[in-house]
Image 1 (cartoon, rainbow, N blue to C red):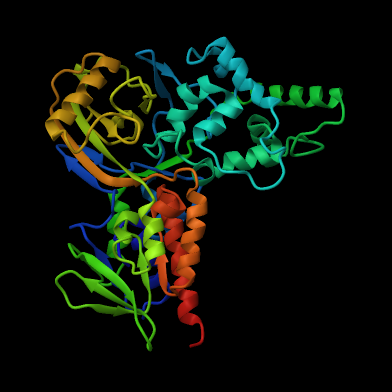
Image 2: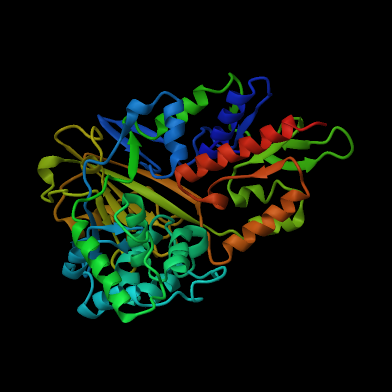
Length: 494
């Protein structure tokens, strides 16, 4: 494995568990494994420098945690409210948003985030047909284009764009809907309306529908359409109780998952501070790859899994068309600034997980009220805030600004939006240069071309956030799938 992030470690774990006899090597250029996942403790505070949670509805990460004997570590957020910055104020995000689609009528009608016209335009999704009439394979388009077409520009700019784009620290006018949230495109193709699509899915799951689990898109009569809409509105009114949180974290922080994975591997298997410069297919027999490690003799491997970022992988592979496709995957840089405070200094009630900042509303992307979101992240009399900077849609130059300047920007914005905070006990800044892949429009087609090139290089595998999803469960799934492919390869005759 070239790359010791969550994908590479999961691949190695799966291989070692199934075939302890296999010789494994995990090579990581940095001085630590885990990629963006890291947990630190400072003066009784717990800091997840990278991702602080994962989606529980995707099963691979939960399954991995349980296999590693860490099920007792799973925890859900203490708070549920999310705020959005609107005209310089924190406004509550409407309750009942599922994948940025409204499932509760009351909160959407009452929210100050949208004008009356914006609310009516969002509800117009109920009647708008699918882009292609609901048949065939959908063309790729940006998240912004897709959401604007379904819900209108106001909803796209003020609610949905910040919510969906924030996951990637990206620009929703560039990010691909098919590569980021294909579920939404699937809902449109299957049901026309996204809202009615979620309604149909809920009916199917709870067996509430007597006649059909999916309201037809092309009703044969006006009466049928009225009955369908009446049923939908009744369901929206009934959906008052919030569903369980879709997120899990770990009591000792996300870094504990990395520690458990590394600890499950054979001693000496993981090597850090080692950089691979090239991977060359061996000529003749035996078939395999020559892996050149900087400053060391080259090594031979039957198969190689590259989970390093695409911009690093491009310099290793010898196939020029493959390298060109990898080079075309854009990345952005981000930073997180943690601010520790005394609770008595903070006047804000911290009644939620934090807030998102739409484009034009501030110099940070978002903020998390860490100790309000998760238990045991701060001493009882302490407050831990986390601000996100950088990404594709801010003017903050992370390479130009030093840590003190980033802290100044973060504290200024937090104070502007939350009120006086007092003098920090301490701050910590973590930088992630070119660490966030951007699946822009056309990304799905690019991945198909990459797969085609890999077919000509049997035994070489690419996996990680640049390919099959950026979330922890997505990376864990890719590690499992890659391990399964390798096990099948080793089991094949010859």
